[in-house]
Image 1 (cartoon, rainbow, N blue to C red):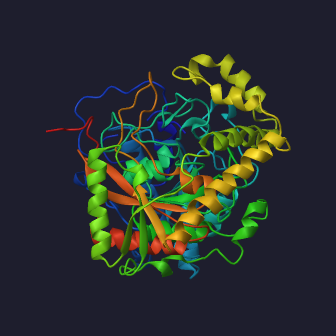
Image 2 (cartoon, rainbow, N blue to C red; image 1 turned 180 degrees about the vertical axis):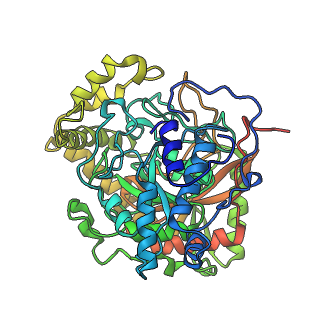
Length: 542
């Protein structure tokens, strides 16, 4: 939706836009001194929680329609104008109408649950059966409209959430090039970090993280194969939950790997992330991997929120992920002191014996899975899609090199295309190795050996400058052990370095989300590191 169409939609809904004001382009916006538009802008819903929005709608102070309208106005002012964050790739033209229907339900005494009327944004690799497209940020799928909802979209809609739009991402969820720039897509351009606009938002769920951070929605949904929820959540100062693979259905999500892919909630608080997780969790009839969640999923994860939840917990410190940045290490030492003060037994250090012993095997497995899973997804699309196989996608990018590959190529696509199918003995061998070393001899062995409830590590370093010449150059990341095992992680803000957020990750065994939420909530309540961004053009080292 272009800005003019957006203005027409909101005016038709009876709104007057606030003064001020990313159009999707692949060139940087001109930037001078950027006005502060965080708390100082007087946004009525600034940092509103899901519970607060529900209370306001219940009391009559706001309606779902007025709440949606205010967020849409803010997207226009902050994301497409002002600092031009570029986090929202497309808006839902029916958002206000949907919100109005939900208001009518509320007046009739029907409230579907805690997400009734709550505005959310979803990553642009998640299908929604409406007038929005699903493209993974690629021009190759521009114009494709899904015939049915993904499991995630269906659950959101059934719960009464208002899907405001789709968020930008690292194109194809960052599985295209080894020299990619996170937060960039051919369709959406570059997403910018709200804490310093010349810094990278990380990815691949870049837009979801930035939109939550910048108060463009109450919460958002991202997806992760390895780090794509927790890393942008950390770097944008929010809470992100990467669930156990199989807890949330993946049908209707553009894939990388059936073995590691999962959707997950992104929010400003642990409570809001827990609410959204409860809506999304459960068996998906179109995703056989979710059968393992039967009896493991909870409809209400807020029951595990406990400010005293750290007491007597056994926490292991994975120091293998320390030593990459002095400032990050200092924040982690502070975090460890907080946990001890809260009554945790901290086992420091602990060692994951298999760490880095299966990196190459996991990469090989991902290449096989990407080819097989993406080919299956694309082949099922109707004729409105321009490509129906990885080979056709490669050809499309070559034919549209000026728009799709102005900064980096598609060498991962080529490597994947060379692989055989999932019956290949080589594939079966590497998958067995990854599962054994990541699970039985990896995280499970580590947790069992020291009788740990969870392990902790810095999620990532602070945001790096966005660089279209050299690509990403981040300072580490601890997502891989849990991601490769298919196990859950949750990242929570742990402090700031020169005004840039840094998160801490709690990880554990399969379906341990209740434990991780309990620990993360206790840490969050004791530290309260969240701080709203003010959108400066660069880091002010003074």
